[in-house]
Length: 216
Ligand code: TYD
Image (tube, rainbow, N blue to C red; front, side, top):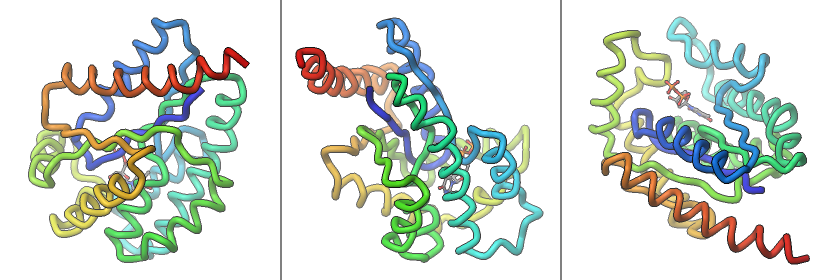
């Protein structure tokens, strides 16, 4: 069954769509495992606290990239690989592409360097399908600042518009480079429209791969 990831700037509406897709897949009788990054395991949740804590002002860029990769390594070993082995569909809110964009491009560490670290962390596990929720930086900023009435910005959200522009550009470049894996969604459209589009892609994937597998 497929390993599906969801990427994009904060506030692009990923979590709503992950929940809706999970519902649809479950209704088809499929076993679905939903998880998120950073976090998704005890160890990952501890790393998440460190990574998002605004009080951590001295985290060096390479340390940041390694901690995201460490959280991911744990998630792959403890949750994602076992779930795939049991035949579940795995839906993951962010994965390696987030590190390529936020750390590789955003922090200037280099996309290829961060990719190399992540090949090691994931032991080469690549998603079958990735939905890139694309919104302009201004829209993302607007949506997260509404959330921030409840809480202050986290360590990553405090970064500049220029930083997020680099992140968005990097995501778009990944989508262009890997059109078979990455589907770019215009995420400013209504949730119902996005839901239909995502469902069509997932069904297409399932009919291409799964029926083939069942016939064998
Ligand atoms: P997320 O869980 O989407 O944030 P929230 O709970 O606020 O919706 O992700 C946390 C932040 O971490 C987000 O700003 C993106 C960032 N991030 C990276 O910089 N690199 C990564 O590899 C990942 C997975 C996330």
